[in-house]
Image (tube, rainbow, N blue to C red):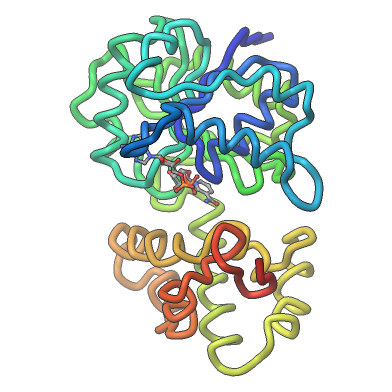
Amino acid sequence: MAEFGKVAVIGAGVMGAGIAAHVANAGVPVLLLDIVPDGADNRNTLADTAVARMKKADPAPFMSPRAAKLVETGNLEDDLDKLGEVDWIIEAIVERSDIKRDLYAKIDGVRRPDAAVSSNTSTIPLATLTDGLSDAFRRAFMITHFFNPPRYMRLMELVTGPATEPEIAAKVADFADRRLGKSVITAKDSPGFIANRLGVTWIQLAVGQAVEQGLTVEEADAVIGRPFGIPKTGVFGLLDLVGLDLMPHVGASLAAALPEGDAFHTSRRELPLVERMIAEGYTGRKGKGGFYRLN
Ligand code: NAD
């Protein structure tokens, strides 16, 4: 059985904060790092703000006060060396392969040789992420795709590459299963893996076909939300949670990767309502509001 004494999460945004909170709730110490924003007095401000947000998230806190004590915050400029103390490094930064690869090169210089490294990417193939990195890094690397919110969504997709050491991947899968309570499914290194390949296709249809054509979100969700197995939120509540601004990126990335004739392409619609909402800052919970919720 795999025991990880300490885990690092890099990126204290929507997903990184949620993953760090979930790991800490499981009683495992976490190092949470992010960049230093321009002109910040507190160099750990992004991670500190994330911890405060997780402690008072609405409607229930995502992290208990006891768990919050297990989270050490820091920044990538001053605290990179601390990554040498952890057993698993989870990257949850912006969905840009060039930025992720730059970070991996830095991580590779400081990580313990037996530490696992994984990305929370939703759409970038593993082969692209590891392009140009060392063989040793490729052996330790995999994708662990958590879903939003990490505390409540049980699914975790695990994607390994031809170079990934099976023993390291097995340790991560075992820890995610036993300590984090995840249902781990192994997915191929293919566009959108499993959940987004299927999910984004029908979410596009739901938004494009239903709401852009004049149904209310409640009417659409009554049929395609909970009955389709999206607990509590429905399709549109899920989009509020995930962030509407992510939709065009995920859509474009899948469109570029999938072959002509794939059902994904035929499900694509113009989404003027969504574009207007994003432009006006209605990006969901992290913005002024979303389909359901006005913050
Ligand atoms: P986010 O925008 O909320 O957070 C991204 C974080 O990356 C920010 O804290 C930002 O400061 C940091 N960052 C920006 N530039 C950086 C750099 N150069 N180096 C290091 N950190 C940098 O994004 P998110 O929604 O949390 O997504 C993070 C990852 O998780 C992405 O790969 C995304 O595809 C994936 N993901 C997102 C969701 C979701 O529902 N939002 C679900 C599953 C997977």
